[in-house]
Every structure is written in C-alpha cells, then in structure tokens.
Image 1 (cartoon, rainbow, N blue to C red):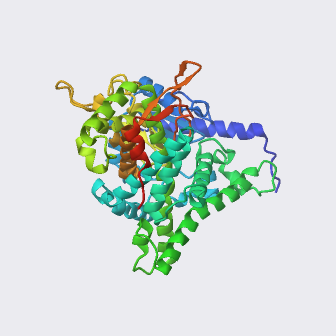
Image 2: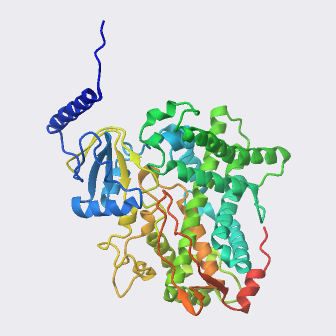
Image 3: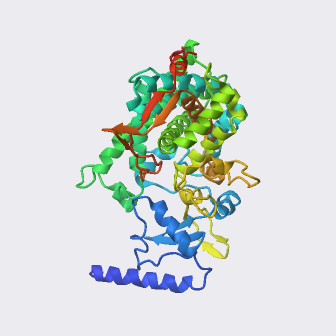
Length: 509
C-alpha cells in the first residue's frame, strides 16, 4: 500500500479546514464571552503580554465587560474583572471551578503539583486544606502562635536597627523563621540558616519554572518527552536539578521533626500534631509532608512581599505614618512594644494594614488560574470544560468605581468618615476566591499586622537623602506570579532613645 506524500501545505489546509468546521459548529452554540479577535489556528497568542498581564486584562474589562475570553492554540482563557463575577463563578460554582491547570515544566517535570497551590482538585487537595485549616483556619486558632510572632518580629527590629540597608533580607529571614517554627517546630539560626537558604532557593526556582511562557515545553507539552541530551532540551536538566531542591525542601524539615519526636525533644508544631500518636500509611505520610511544605513555602513568600510593600508605603506617605504612630503612642505608650492584645484598640493601624493589602497586590492574577471541570453556561456565555479562569485581583482592588483614587495610599477609606460607609474590605479579595482561597490568609494577616505595629512603634521610615536631595522610590512591581515591589532605598531610624531601649530588650522564647 502506497503512503501519499504529506506536505506542510496539506497540513495547513487540513488545520484551516478543521478550524472553519469548528467555527461553523460554534455558531449553533451559546457564545463565548467577548474578547479581542484572534487569528485562525493560533488564536490570541499575541494578545497576552508577558509583562504585568493584569494591566492588559484591566483594559479588556473596560472594553468587553466583567467577563472576557481569549483562545490560545485551542486553550480557552476566561478573565474576570469584577468581584461579583469572581464570587458567582469561583465561589458559588466551586464544584466546577476549583481545578488547576497542568503546568508541564513547573507542575510535572519539576514536580510542584505535589503542593497545594498546584494540586489538582480532589480528595488529596481537600485533605491538605483541612490539615492547614485545623491549625490556622481563623484568628482564634492562631492565638497559640501569637507569642512566636511577637518574639520573631522583636528580633526583626533588632536586625533592622543594626543593619537597615538589608531590610528585604531581614523580612525574608523573619517570615521564614515564623513559618518554620509553626510548621516544623524549628528555630532558625541567626545567620546562614540551612533551612531558610533551602526554602529561599526552592521558592526562587518555583517562581521561575511556573512563570507563564518562560519555557517552550509549557506551550508545546510534547517536548517533555525529548531526552535531556537533545539540542535545546536544557530545560530537562534544570527540571531534574530543581526537582531535587523541591524534594529536599519538603523532606529535610520533615525528617527533622521525626528525628526530634523520636528523641523526645520536638517542639509542638503543625507537623508534630499531625504525626503524634498515629501510624501513617506511605500515602498519608507523603500527604503530611507536603501539607507542611506547602504551609511554609507559600506562606513565607507572600508575607515577605506584603511587609516590604508596607515599608515602601511608609516611605512615600509620611502623613499616614504619623497618624498611625500617634495612635500607637496613645494606646501603647513609650514603655513597651505593641502586642496582639492591642489590636482591637488600634483602628487606624488596622485600616493601614488593610490598605497595604489593597495598594500592593501580592497575587495580581490570583496566583494560578482555576480550571473548569465541566461545561458551564454563565450569564448567557458558554464556558467550555478545560477553560482556565483568571481573576484579575489587581483591578478589583484598583477599580476607581470601588476605591476612590486607588493609587493613593489612604487607610481612611476603610474607616467611617462623616457618615460615609467604608470602602469594601480588601482581604476578602486579595487572598483569592472559592475553594482555592489562600488557606494561610489569617497567618499572613497576623504577620503583616504585628510587623506593622511594632515597626511604627520604634522606627521612623523616610526617603533617603543623597547630596541634600530626597530620593523618591518608584512604585514598580515584578511581573512574577507572586509580585514583589522592586528593590528600593529608604531610611529607617529609631524614633527616640526609649525606642532604642525597647529594641535592645531580650527577645527569647
């Protein structure tokens, strides 16, 4: 039997034919949501930018409405630009809208699909979320960890006082110290801690391998099958190396807890509570290990970004800083550091924390897309099974119809002003929606609050002066999945000699 010669022209014509047939069939279906017109075959491949896509998504919202649609190489993508559409779809239809997409590089080859953020929706995902919820599902369950946070942020004040130029590193160290103490009962070393270094390295690799479009294999998944030695397959070597880092990040702290428990010296922690008095199967053991890894890997990175944003905001908006300091001085006084017990008595500082979460959005597009597990009709639009749904959280928190002058850092928007209702609570938006909402949101909120109030109690934060000129930092954020303010300079100095004395007090467990 002769096999006919197939040319590229034949393939192109066949593809165009299939596309035209699909278009004809689709005319008989409920329409997709509106969106930019794409090209045959490749769709909207040129319409989604690599740099700050949330800005482009916001423009789509203005042009097409709260729900817009694009298609890239057959993959449907739905963008949501309103809180209502996100709640109606991701919350109220959570059974359909809670899966995650397959990421060939980060999820499959490197293996991050083991962690909750990329775990497919199902029994394992629900169990990991349940484990975390039992430890930090609300503010009340976190109270047992308040002394840990107060002590670690007191140590943070000492580090900043001694070396303010290393602010970002101090935030990273402190956030990691808190999470590791809670997740694994591990007390970090003051310098060059091996667990902190491991987490930082793993999270850097995580962000690099899960950034959309960073690797060709995410666009052409079949490339995952080529051997590592094949020309252009350097990503396979990276995946192998990064997979080892990912595995170490989970396994080494987990082994530490088991060894400490065997020796009878383990501190109470998220992990020890899940292990004590239980005989686990291999599957259950793996689930506990990855629940703990998820807790401290994801939690530390988002907290670092938000606290760094607080220092940026205080540098740029000194009047806000002075109002918060005046409130703290009146309630707490100069003779002690603030504590969680003061929280309900500091309404302006509470509003300031809300504004930090709104003004500098850590997950501008909701970390990772939701994936639709079955066809749906929503608001008269066809949402195909397998669609990726992206909530544009950045726009939801910067919509001028919701937040007056959104680029302005203004905590008073969340207070009662002359009978005017406060603007919407940002913490019900910034942590995501539905069954994929961040499970560590209460810990993140507590960490940002205590770092804010302690820092304002003892430090004045201001612009750096160089040659008599004040240097105004630029408000600019990275385009990564977890967005950080780009590095900036600020001046951090003790407010008084009493503040120095408070900083230098012992801070021990």
